[in-house]
Every structure is written in structure tokens, then in C-alpha cells.
Image 1 (cartoon, helix red, strand yellow):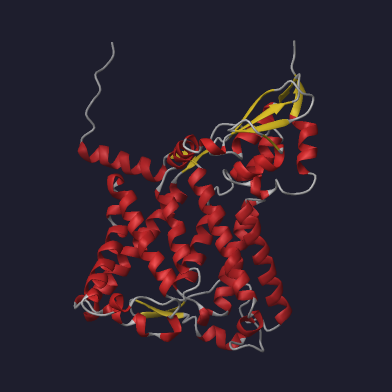
Image 2: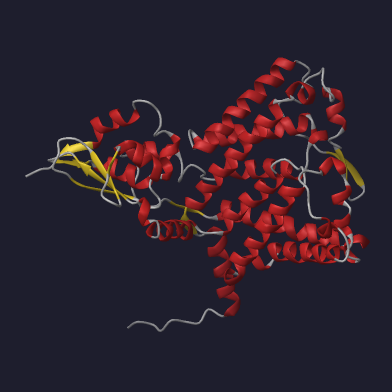
Length: 407
């Protein structure tokens, strides 16, 4: 005889809900998308640093190795006992510029591979170690965005970052080594990214509210007068009274919401949109390289992978003018691995494949006009930008993507 379900109680249900939120399994799409965006931003960061590499990381630059160690503050007070905190880094005490340059180049390459999702586990670990080593080599040039870059690289190194939106997955699909179903992974690394993003905003609000300039509403007046941060012109009324009171308190409200209410799903979209506006203004008005982009990239972690995939399909359904119909050669069909490969690189579902009457591949746009096949696919399938433009790729793909229709 079946026993009636027992009420777990409010406390137990809350614990189970939190446990499922933190340690349950879900789609890896959001984590993979964050890895691709983050890796791209890391590449841009290294491109920026490479312009003055000798000035920042060599013994002939502004900060030689001995001086770089002075900025790390290795001694902290643990209760009453001073403790030396070890600093991980491959460049600690290194005075040979050739070694420093080699670490920089290897980290740069790891950032490229991280963005592409190629050999992801090795790439993300290498990127994390390289970023930490370079930051500990010259901490004098770091800002808040660099701290985000360093911490997020460590999280990606311990996460299944290549399970989605990666070349690793596409290669596995092509070789038939993985299922076409959406990869399910433990959500705790993604939750950790989202939690740290919220914690950053919450602690920032807390610390700001302790300052009298934020309490009296004039704090935003000062950054606009710092010439080293000046970027593009801003209307004068935005940086003077009485508007300055409004922008100062609004900044506190938005940052507090990003640290707390962002986890409440009915308000999540509006709160993240306000964060986009906030960082959009910072990016326009202040010269803090990549800071706003790095902060906004973490917003991806607040969404589940299923939500992102569903959004992509909804957007694709509204892009009818970009629809493409590809006719396969007569008597041929896509192999299972080729079909999975093509479906994966087309998240907006803009390309459909049908049986054709011609011995060659052909394609038609939404108005029925014949267009070049592979160039049109590359213009619609989002994942094609990684490799679709390489000469000779599609010709090799054609040879292996088809099989005769049986019967």
C-alpha cells in the first residue's frame, strides 16, 4: 500500500531548494558562453598590455622584479600573529626578461584557446596560472577589472568550461564521441561566478555608504574632475548639482539591487538592464580599460543555459528574413554526426536542410533567391565564425557530411 507523501517542513524544503540551486545539474550553455566572452576579453587585455610590455614587465621598465614584490603586501595580521601569505606565481623573483616574455606569450595563446574552447581544460588552467603570475609580477598597474579577470580565470579553470559553445564539443560531435543532447553539468561553478558578482556589488555598496561623500550625495562629482580617467565628453548638467545627488544615490541603489534582488527572477532582467546602463555610462565617460565589459560579462551567469537556448530560438523565429534553406545533393542525406554538428553551430535555427533534386548543394534565402551555400551558412550560423571562413573547410566537410539514402 502506497504511503501518502509526508510534509518535509518549510526549513527542509528551503534547504533542499538551496542545495538544488547550488549543486543541481543543468545546461552548460551559459557557462560555455561566459567562457567564450571572458576569453575574448582576456585576449583584448593582453593585446592592450603588449603595446607596453617592456615598460610593465621587464627589468628595464618602470617596475623591476624587486620593486614588483613591494606592491604585494605579503604580511597580514591573523588575529595578533603576523603571517606571511605565499603568492603563487611563475615570475616571483625572475629577472630574465626572456622568461617573462615567454610566460606572457603562453598566457596570451591560452586566452585565445579559452575563447575558442579548444583543449579547454589545459587552456583555462594555463590562462589562470599565467594571469596570476603576471598580476603578481606587477601589481602596480592593476585596477578592479584586472581583479575580476584574475578571479574569474580561476573559476573557469575548475569548471567544465568546454562542455558547450566550444570547439572541443564540436570536434566531439563530428567524431560521434558525444551525445547531441544538451550537456548537463553541476551548476556550482556557475553559481559561484554569479554569487561573487553579487558579492562584489554588495560589498561595494557597503563600503561606499561608509563614506560621507556618498552619504551626502556628492561622491559622483569627483571622478568627473580626475583628468587621468577622462575619456569622452559628458554634458555638464550630469556632473553638477542638482543632478549629481540623483546619480550618486541611484548608483548606490543599482549596485545594492545587483548584490541582492538580482536573484529574484521576476526582477532579474530589469536589475541587470540597469547594471548595463550603469556600466555603459562608466565605459563611455571613464578610461578604465575593459572594466565595464568584464563586469557585464558575469551577468551571463545569472541565467540558466536552458533560458539562453530558449531565448535564441525565440529570436530566431522572429528573423524570418534571414532564413536559409539548403538543398542536399539528390539521393544523399546528412550523417548523424554532421547533422548534430550543423545544428549546434546554428543556435538561432536560421538554416534548414532538405532533400534536393540537383547533384550539387544549393541554397535559397527567404525570398527564394539562389545564394552561395557556404557563405550564406556562415552569415547565419553563429558558430561558423570560428572556422567556417578557413579556405577549404567546407569542401572537406562536403566529402564527409553525406551518406546515401538507403532504400
